[in-house]
Image (tube, rainbow, N blue to C red; front, side):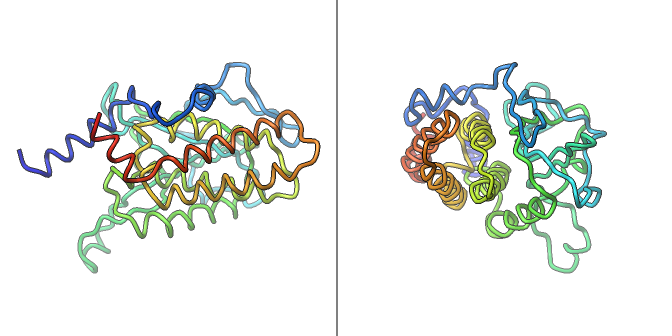
Length: 288
């Protein structure tokens, strides 16, 4: 069997085996918090209550950033769908979504490789990736499921997230599906969002708790967390963001229950990130 075919099959087999978790390195309390949200869970931001239940994104509600109002507020979500239009495929494609709190339109952007014939003619065939509107690539029979956080961001912040992710991930890393993939870009956006939340004048622990729970429940669990825990750039961005949150929350005198929970969350997550190096995760994957 050719080496390339062996590598592709082996990698897809590892990615597709969602039943295999990083239980050898994630402690019990971390895993317990990684479960899907209870049906009654909700959060309140700026007097508006947000449901944290997973939601299916209607394709007709998916819009382009060009259609995003400049003065709106948009809720951060993690989004996944089938990696290919194949029923019951155990491989997921990830993206980030921002929901307009006024219209319920959703802006879903992920790592994609746009077909660009004219650039190929000029510069030669390449497989560049960028943060792009997922509506352009969507099979309507395989919609996205979104996992809300209740954390709100402005349009200029969102555009900055995408530009920075293009710079850190898409322009510098080949999308080889193993240590650099769609999850690499999605988690980088979440890390950048955490940095913003940690620096805001009004620090809302509940919002950040929700963001971390979504991270724990999906990119840090899906497909052995390939593209996240074995990608040094993503891991560094995530460590920096969680450290910023930890520094802010530990500086609070007389913390609330939510702030105390956030302190514990950041401590456990930083321990996990410290233990998961690229070489170790790769070795563990191939030893399964």
